[in-house]
Image 1: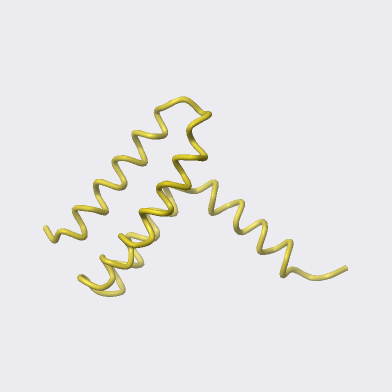
Image 2: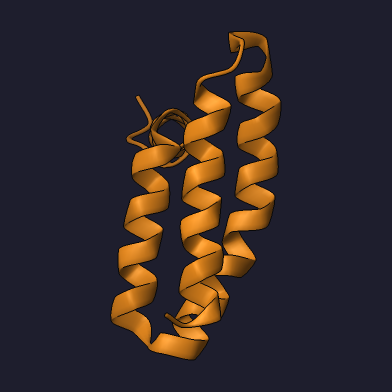
Length: 83
């Protein structure tokens, strides 16, 4: 298994372990996972190609679904139709 995919799997396991902890640690851990996950997605894309990068990014978005949900809500509020 390529090293980049191993890192991505370890990132996913750490994200699942964080979710088992107390709820007050979820958002700080989510910011840490985002900060570490973005370079990992780039490394996977560099080493294995864009399809693997898209797959790892989708897996990361499924683990961090609430930050993605709130980001989408913010995008719609800022760039949505102006009434």
